[in-house]
Amino acid sequence: MTPYTLLILLVAAERLAELCVARRNAAWSRRLGAVEHGRGHYPVMVALHTGLLAGCLAEVAVADRSVAPALGWPMLALALAAQTLRWWCITALGPRWNTRVIVIPGRPLVTGGPYRLMRHPNYLAVVVEGAALPLVHGAWLTAACFTLANLPLLAVRLRCENAALAAAAPAS
Image 1: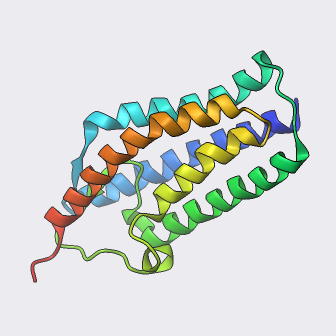
Image 2 (image 1 turned 90 degrees about the horizontal axis):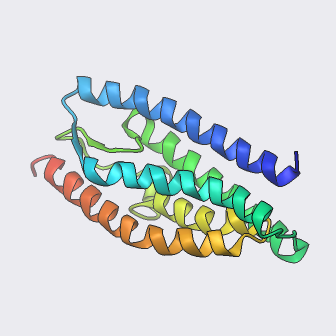
């Protein structure tokens, strides 16, 4: 097993851990009257993110990509920074974090952690990771395809999440 394969498997394991956290958080949110939005785009998002990991491994194997250390090391640093940002988001949102758009009506927006710096920091982590993770091992085609496919999905997701948060905002 190559170090890159191990890296991708570790990211896949991290994604499974995220899904466990998300499932627990969804149950907590629903007990408090949460409403889910955007169910239609969620399977597409899961397929795209699964495809990113599969594409990383497949492109390296099929196209016989080699590691260019001058690119690989900085991309690894960016991919790790994206993971750090993602878990900072998860920690800041606590039980309100989810992979789905599940919002508890009447709750104020979280403004701590990375949310004091920007409105949707987790999506910055997704964009950075989607480009950086494949480039750790020179999988430029996977990086490009994921990035191009993710842009319209991210636009749908942001519209959905912003509308859901606005609709659930506490009355002023």
